[in-house]
Figure 1: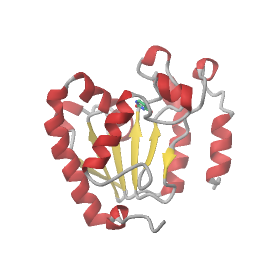
Figure 2: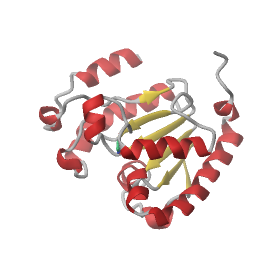
Figure 3: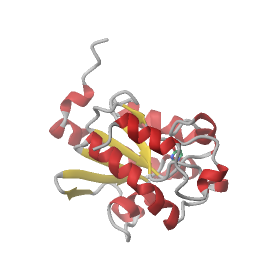
Figure 4: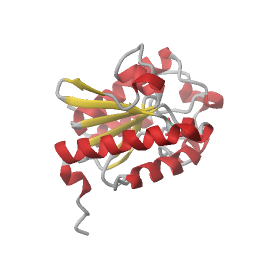
Length: 193
Ligand code: URA
């Protein structure tokens, strides 16, 4: 199996799909490589492309707030995307682009071995949980895939567009917090340094 460093090196050089031609930075992932909880977004936006880090634009600010509501932050979870390069004008990543990129996420998941996966939004949920996933009906539900507990919540961009979805997301986040308490309570422990 590759190491994190080898995988990130390969990903940084990637030319598997046309998004490589328009990217500023590859956005590999951020957070703890020891985390039990993996968040999966869709793909980098403008700010992420410029800075090389997931969720640093407006949606990222809201994601940080969502994490803080349940005593999490970027140091005790891992955050990655389905595609590592920005789709032009933030359009949905094409299936061909997802197919070209998904191997990196699979390898990240194999290295991390998370107990819990949280899909952020419908694109990630349709790729990871079920191609027919309906985010409006199925957000907050839990699925067992080979012993890994997987759920999907609304994407923070959707919550920025439609604040009326925020109360449902609060309930989903409390469900996530409870799942973490059951399966990996050390996630919440403060770091010793
Ligand atoms: N939206 C995503 O899905 N991922 C990011 O990294 C930023 C915005």
